[in-house]
Length: 78
Image (cartoon, rainbow, N blue to C red):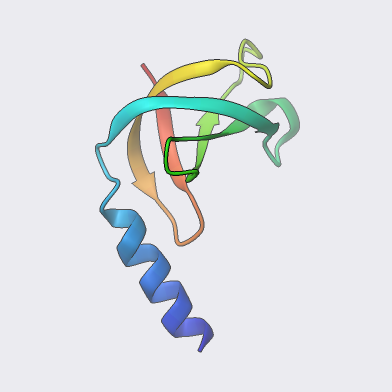
């Protein structure tokens, strides 16, 4: 059942590749200040790099999705 979930999650997230839009930052990433997580209009989690520490919780950022996992989308700030 876990394999089916993983497959479906990844396949569904692939439809978001190359999507561009705004996200609202709502949490600090697992690597402390190296990344942040935001949510798009569909409440999909989007992980973006934040090495310079400019993005804070509550900020709005325009991003483009360049990679997906079975759990989240990976974006680049535009």
